[in-house]
Image: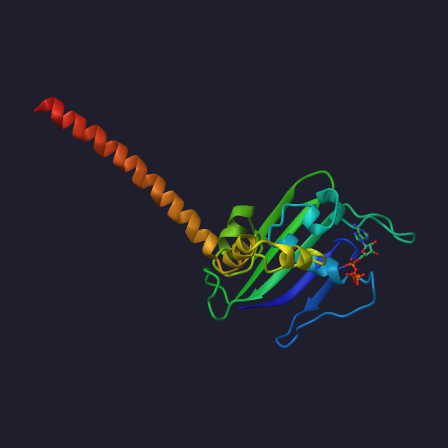
Length: 199
Ligand code: ATP
């Protein structure tokens, strides 16, 4: 599995449709200050379901839509599509290529699609949850965040690593299973009481 293609249209500084072909072997993007390198990373996080405007270096979510320049009027919507090569079947979907899209209008929320079919944010999160990418996976480390990680306590740092390794999902499942066990124990106790009463 690898990120194959990223298309941005009306997203931050990318007013016109721009496609980045991320051929295997590409390991970095270089460019002058302010040319939009971080906006590309923001687009990756956004299309995978990022909900926090701050994580996208904005004040409100609407800030991801092209705000206009001296020579170009603002746009009404932002669109990002991410194509993932899935020939190894790492994503639980029977397609060799998976395209996740997100669109946002100035006056409303976001719309998501997987391979062109409209879906919910939850579907995107489910699709990516076992892949090691996606929201809350800590695969994107922003400028300045390195400092936070270096200054974190050993416990916090362990939390980052566990999330990146996908342990969080299993911890949540374990908590759910323990809650079920607790309620089953309550039912068993009640049953025991009833048996004592009947005898
Ligand atoms: P550096 O190397 O300094 O970190 P960079 O290449 O990462 O720079 P970005 O932070 O990705 O640059 O891009 C910043 C540019 O994007 C700024 O010129 C800013 O005005 C522009 N920009 C951000 N949001 C929008 C928006 N909504 N509409 C139009 N332009 C935007």
